[in-house]
Image (cartoon, rainbow, N blue to C red; front, top):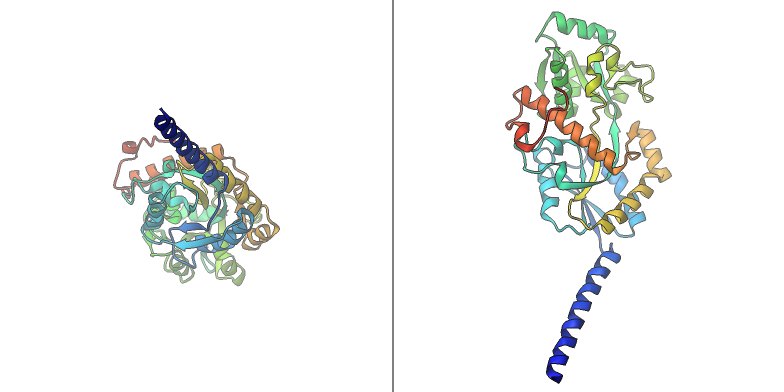
Length: 338
């Protein structure tokens, strides 16, 4: 009898210890350094943003935050690295929009549905630019010439599935037959425009503003449905192409994610620290200096809804153009716009 009683006491102690350990595991988060993984090489826009954000997050979460570059496959290698780690909040994904199209491009089986959004971070205004010596003085003239000479007006972009590619595909969806040429990177695509190898391109304002100020490029329109506060003297593309309005806004932002099954208390700890980091005056100054647009005003539900719309629009643009390997329907991605 005593022996059985003793065994019950031991079992009860083990159970209570396990419960206590699990509770402490979550309550004590974070207890060690946190890895902030991004799927691009050092020096790019996403990397530069992450390296300003990371030390601020570190300050407010109370543990070291280390930026780790796992570049390759348009961000898929870094994304799969995070997915393979434990759901304990110690490996975060600093992602871009490419995650939305991994499935249709057959890059990875992962999508935004495999992660939970902590914060939408920033987006860089997209601008339609031409060489400064271009004959096109406004976006209307460019559109008119494209209509007159289908397949003849040349546009550069960085590569398949990237923002410039999707923007070009949207023009084609709207009946503007442009000749699209990939240049393997955003900078190369921009230089090709400055040199007159192509007629126009879509550029990130943070990247092209020095070229605009130097007189190497001229801005014709912003890739927005409304007038931009960043470039108040440049009209939105919808002023000429009103039929683009249902597709907009179509931002290409950075977003902070964790694995879907991360405990909610850990998620909220990260979210609270991130909010403080994004409200920090040093972050606000960085965003202002770079002419970025803050996106952290969006709630979790609004972020989820945005990526659902984005995934639908861009997946079908890619598939209809023959640029996607897989049918979006195979992944339950319905057409947002019929």
